[in-house]
Length: 171
Ligand code: ATP
Ligand code: MG
Image 1 (cartoon, protein in one colour):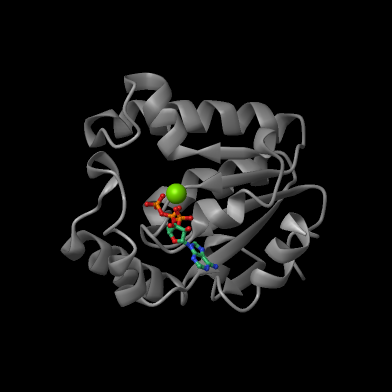
Image 2: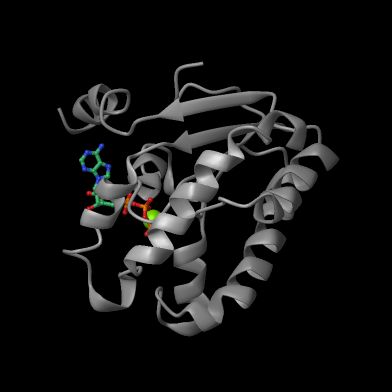
């Protein structure tokens, strides 16, 4: 599989710590196909970085995902998704409607993810220890993805594999 050419009836679950490049990868698909947890945090609270809005944003994401899966529409979930608990309802929604779940592991080194927090606006900066924790969880996830219901697992180092496609987009 070479993304973004993925099967039409797929749910793409991006997995990676803050700063890994998930939203950058997500933007290679049309905006209507992306369910972004940050965007939904902003929808419910006016602040994409408001962690207190996460519960409502997750509920909204699950509702919208169900609506799209029911229509069998190609969808990308842009959230960290580093825990099996976060991924479970996503896979379940895809399964209910016969959609293929594809995990895209954005395996950017932890140090790079941490360095990328620097230039961000204050409300979008994730503390170093939290990013490190998310990175560890992503690495640990890798062993269980198949058994969680992801028959397809794609790795992205977010530099080598995606760059040629981004160049084509801007060229
Ligand atoms: P968050 O979970 O906090 O939303 P994210 O995984 O969505 O993080 P992005 O916002 O996509 O991360 O990327 C973080 C930073 O890294 C951005 O400044 C982006 O421009 C940069 N970046 C992402 N991908 C690449 C790449 N392939 N090459 C160089 N820089 C990149
Ligand atoms: Mg993002």
